[in-house]
Image (cartoon, rainbow, N blue to C red):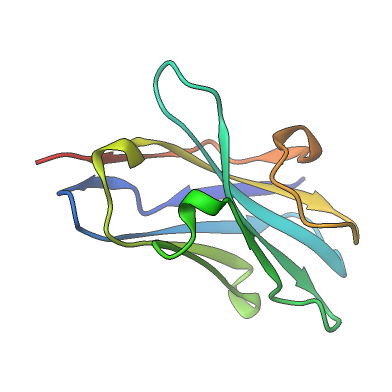
Length: 129
């Protein structure tokens, strides 16, 4: 079955960096999207970024929520079936549980959480001095 396992979270000081990983397994698809979402205590889940994994020319195409552009970078290593989220210049308001999610098929990139049917268990990121 589909498994998504996040890792790399932790405690970091403001201005610091973290790289999250999402290791995917249990499926073989020619075209799918992996996205990162986050949820802070008392807040709704929000999309961070997503990336296309495919055998075609769309491979590696990315999309970011506007507020994440410039500080967060999504990338993938197809050989390792892993997607990364590099987070730089972290702020206390970035504190949240970060989740990766997958949606199969060749559709427009989206960060609507309802469009993703497979989710990891999440990894905690805490930005504090």
